[in-house]
Length: 287
Ligand code: GLN
Image 1 (cartoon, helix red, strand yellow):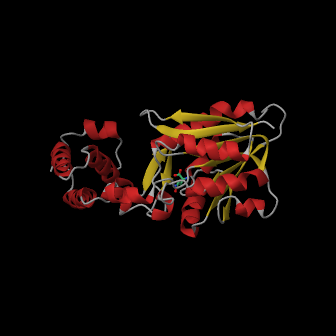
Image 2 (cartoon, rainbow, N blue to C red):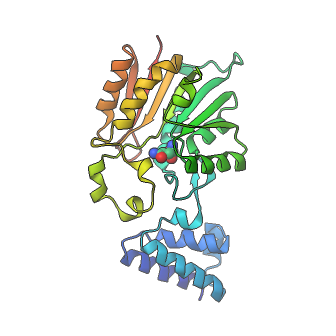
Image 3 (cartoon, protein in one colour):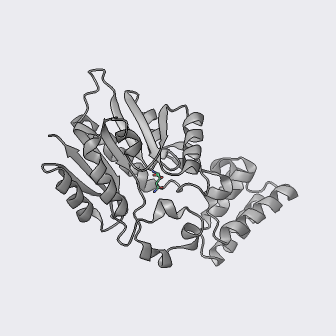
């Protein structure tokens, strides 16, 4: 079978099962080890039978709902490749926007010229994408990450190691591993679970059946984690400080309210993602 024939077969097979044709390309890249450009340049190359077999098996898995990232074991985030497994949420491009929003606002709370590093905590780090990315993007930072799942922490630690990022990982509930030892810092960032339980029924099988519920759902209205986290923040946050949370569409005002109730005088922005959906709440607390 030639490259273009394999791709053509995969794209129609995937589309018949309501999955994107592009998954086929990604899987063939995975099996050949070729870049997308190389794959297109090799359109008429004949693929080895054994490779075609493995590729077709994977396309079948994808058509049944296995996320392509679980098949390849990786996903790109902020230009770097991270390991993923069924123990962690698959990195989403929306979370890259959260990182950008924090980097853009950093000068409001941090003076990078005085040599004092900024202390950041990533709460519920999952695969570690936020913590590792910030540690690598900000050389004058001290980054800690927490998660309640030991399996997730093990994935996050591997990612930090592979990407040479210095991050301290602590197992525990939200900020507790830090507040229990009196640790403080200037930035709390988190992409916590925020999907309302009731949405489970209407979500795509490749998400609900393959990604950890612990990372997705947060009570009846999806706000349970924000409620508990925001209560823990005063014990941790140095001023001026920043809180940066990923949220679901329609949760902006409720999360803003939680923050303002805890910190009167906080400035709170509700930001949309590139698709025009409410996706981030960023708050700066001066006093
Ligand atoms: N912080 C991790 C991420 O952004 C995990 C998020 C989660 O599990 N809800 O991917």
